Length: 165
Ligand code: MN
Image 1 (cartoon, rainbow, N blue to C red):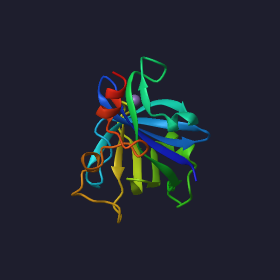
Image 2: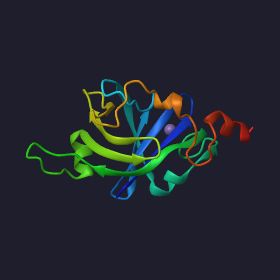
Image 3: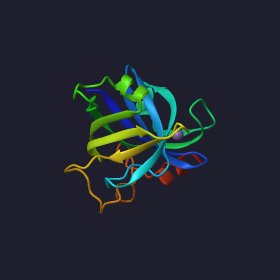
Image 4: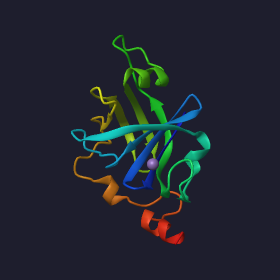
């Protein structure tokens, strides 16, 4: 199954970079408030540049390099299954799903699981990330607050940033 990673990135503004492997690259969206387990909550997701697959392993502090400055922790990672279907219930290829503006997938991560969807909205090119209603949904748990640490190092982003000072 293809990989996904969510990196918490302390750039000019703290955000979560949600990246999914599609055709050998990491398709990426910056989600300022991070994922919500509440299916009624729509989180703004701004498309960003594709990243190389190797970047899924990146955790550290970079200084104004290619991928922007600031500390990065691997907040969650794992694999996903494409669940995007057309009106005839036929599975849509992930690259086509993204072109068409709706991409549904099931995550198998450390923190996140169940079905999620990215949907493009309006003319400004912004997307929304929404938890699909299923057994992994939880309107009462703020997962970004409950589980702030890296799944790799166990550090918070503040602790990681302090190691570079
Ligand atoms: Mn970023």
